[in-house]
Image 1 (tube, one colour):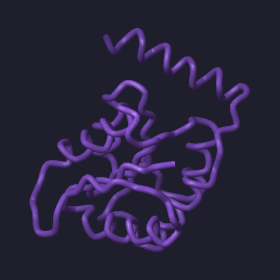
Image 2 (tube, helix red, strand yellow):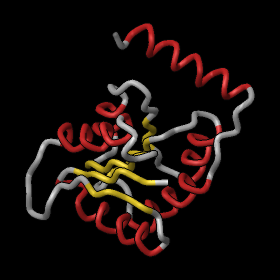
Image 3 (tube, one colour):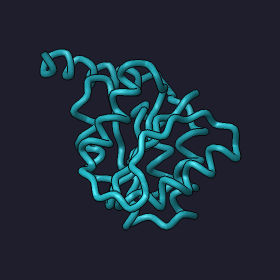
Length: 149
């Protein structure tokens, strides 16, 4: 598995911590920025991470802005992405088990590093259950086919 990792300036510090965590655990990732001290638009960096997943360069994305909400909005504009802003390990677990989330969004201003790393760990380790949840994810894909032309 390869992760697309990106943030705006509000998520820079948390992204650095997540990158260290991934590196220490041998999880492959590509860092799409932003750099230190930059003031940037989250939309641009969320799009970079989302495009990496849509194109197949990466399997999943972790996108970080001030709250994780803006990044989720951006990522969910891309067909095939199911971005979930998670504020707890339970939400991360359910986002994977039931929604087959392929994009986790976090908030640099709303998540402490320890909390965020717990969420990342659960999100990375949890598999999609399929079954009735597979039907539901397929309905999401059907809506994308209908609305993303």
